[in-house]
Image (tube, rainbow, N blue to C red):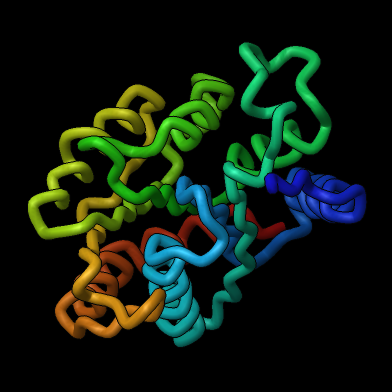
Length: 213
């Protein structure tokens, strides 16, 4: 059963966004778009490892990380039936704005028939065309085997190229064998996550400092 965001969730997102737009947020605001169709997934297990590494790396630079997660499968019929942004359900609008106003976007999807999931793509069909311009985007994907890793370069990177987003040079992929359930265990993948974050740590710190009043 698909669960729509509660009223309290919508109010929290709206309040957080108001503070961010007013320039009161001094940490790094991260939005995660989860394209997985299930609550417990290897995709979110990989994202959890990314977020922990991000906190560790930026914490050493005295930068806090505040993350907000958008599970596209939870947005419900008001989302799946939307064909345009105008007049969209307030809960869906709040999720879209969460992503548009983030300092860093983590775009994560399992591979489905050689590409990202349909709900993942539908979410970005509703994002404003210029809202992601120059926004750092870390690409994350999971698949059944290593041959699915090309989804990062052949599907995800072109999608965010359309938005003129700043996709980070190092993307992260993990296959089913890299996990114990949803827990990432492969040290090679963990090393790639560290490389991805270390490469752009100074850029992220600079963006936070530039946004601080």
